[in-house]
Image (cartoon, rainbow, N blue to C red; front, side, top):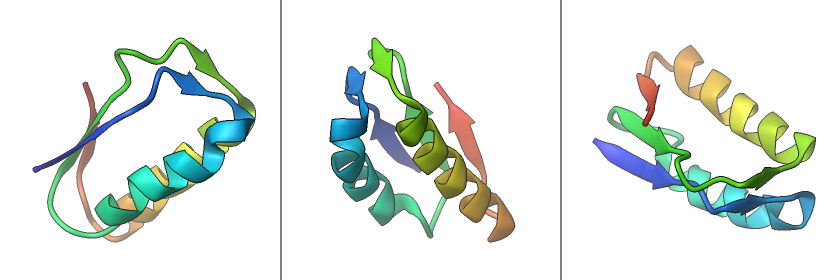
Length: 66
């Protein structure tokens, strides 16, 4: 199972970094997203995370929050 640990700052200026962190987990086994340290988030980062989650679901892959 893969784990994606989200950065504490998910402002719009960090969307490219978030995309790079999520990309290796787009396909493959179950994945857990650890959002425990997130302190700041912009809508653009939420949209990116939601699209990634949706695409995993469409591929039949399980994704969970931690």
